[in-house]
Image (cartoon, rainbow, N blue to C red; front, side):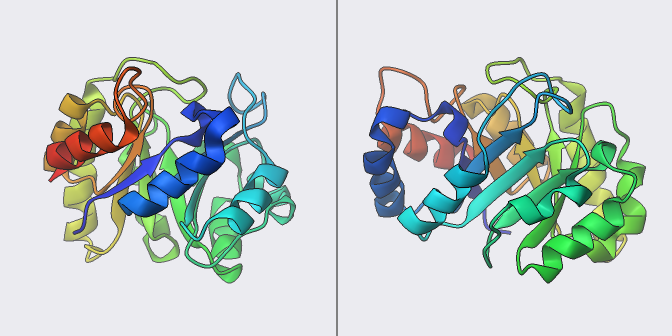
Length: 221
């Protein structure tokens, strides 16, 4: 399965975002990770609906929209979803998770089930026909710069084994949280194929995006 990188735009230089998008297009980046936070489901606020619309007009790179919001089933209509986009909703965020995933697919995007570090992988089992990927949070969601929760590496191993054993080898595993070069290599070996890159790798200060991207690709491949 091809390894893909999804830069976390929450960590981007917003005063130079246009130039950064051009750089990502030149470097062949696969996705752009958009953290949407409501201050309820997670203790922070971040990127929103107008930002997503403007990104759709500024670049052809698919968006990786991570909805860290309460009751996304009632709010999907707020968002402009485009074919090819990934849209992650948290298992813990709504009592209507299957309905929400189905609505994402109906809108033309790829539904992704996100699970927090303390959520067991068995919650994925009955939703396998409804998803294209599982987003494993390797830190508790809400803030950049957190340390990896070590147990989540083994969680990726068990999840990959479960997906393959259930006959869904095409369902990808995405990882989000402290994706350092060292941790990315461990996650890749564990079975992950999409990596949300932030302050621990791609946005390390003092080095270029291109240099960090090459190093990260080497780590996951």
